[in-house]
Amino acid sequence: MILLSREAFEALVDEAIDSLPDEVRRWLDNVAIVVADRPSPEQQARTGLRPGSLLFGLYEGVPKTKRGVTYGQVVPDKILIFQQPIEMVCRTPAQVRSQVRRTVLHEIGHHLGMGEDELEDSGY
Image (cartoon, rainbow, N blue to C red):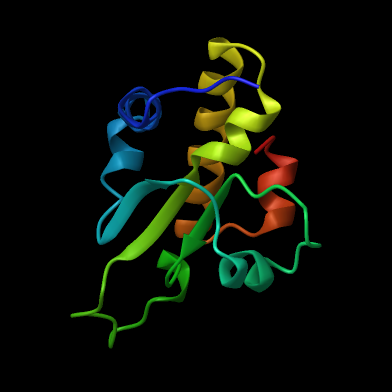
C-alpha cells in the first residue's frame, strides 16, 4: 500500500488527462473529473459489485452516445477517481500512476458511451 497526498494524486489524474490526444480531450465537455477518498455505500451499491469489492472509479451521467436533441442545461456529468482503493492495491508510485491512468481512461470510455465489455476488450 502506498499513500500519496491529495495534491500528488490529483496531479496524476491531471497527467492522465493531459496525455490524451486533443481530439479526445475535445469530447470531454460538460464532465467534471474529481478525486474522492472512496465510493459511498450508495455508489458502491449502484455498481452491482459485491460488498468489499474495490471500486477505482465511477462515471455518473449521460454518455455522449445517449444524448439527444433535448440534452442541455443539465448538471455536468461526473467522473470520480477513488484514491484509497487505488492506493490499497499499489505498492509503488509507478503502479499508482499506471492504475490512475487506466482508471481515468476507463471512466472516460463510459462518458464516450463504451460499455464494460468494450472497455475490457480494449484493455481498460
